[in-house]
Image (tube, rainbow, N blue to C red; front, side, top):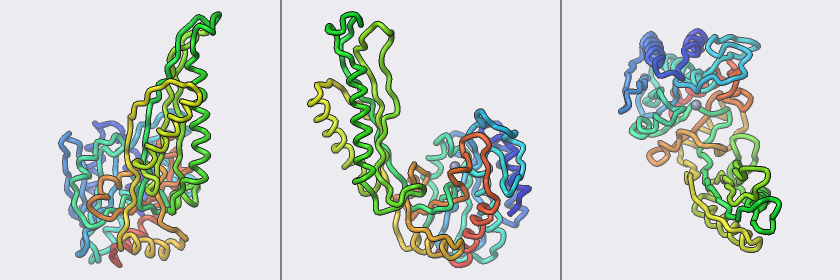
Length: 368
Ligand SMILES: [Zn+2]
């Protein structure tokens, strides 16, 4: 793995649009130095993306990465754009998410002359802001490998449902509470209802698939995350807002979870005399991708890494969603939960970057 190239990429603050051309230049030059053909593709917004073509024939396998990063944020004990190696870890914004994947795939492509697949390294320029969606949706291929995840490979992602529940009460002076109806009390009841529903879901609404982290059988995960209520200490509030989200799974997808939750909520509100309105804000389905290629990937992955992994689903969303309707999708990479991606002191274990390079090289040698 070319550590100097990784350090050079991490040192460029690609959260800023004006620095993106510099990163693109570095990637294109690194590809050409390795004897690989590289192409810069600007999307409709003028954001540059890079495609690097490996040498081989067979199924067209897209290795999907991104060079943009989120801003550093607060709390760093090191300079986020001065990469340093300590105890086998490289620190810096983008070290794990997702610049090490670019270098790992690039080096793997350079090391195999006659691949058993037609490999393409895709390096998107605005993944973190969601602006690369259009670019990704137009890419053609036979298999997509999203190298923007962790060492536990996944073939799907959780879905999301999100609502704003507005509770209706009646405003009054707090010296005369009998004249009002306290929306905050009713909102608190709804919060407790969601908490109970969450423990029910964790026990009974579970997937056959493991979670990429933590869960042996990934459950549906409801949460109450925002509560807005009240304006002054001496006023009984007339409205309150509760934000509720449910992370769904392929077996309990949005079409099942939405009526189940809303009907239970309605019954609970009726029993408790709560008046409310619901607005749905987000509705993204869970998905899972299957095919002979994903099975072959898992076999190869177990053999190369020695890790005992089974098909799993991501707890959040990934870019696999932009490919899943056109081709089988696998997601993996060097990102572990402790790597602080999007947080302070982001780092990557160099041995994980080498693992990614090894896996990609074996895909090239053996095919999928
Ligand atoms: Zn990423």
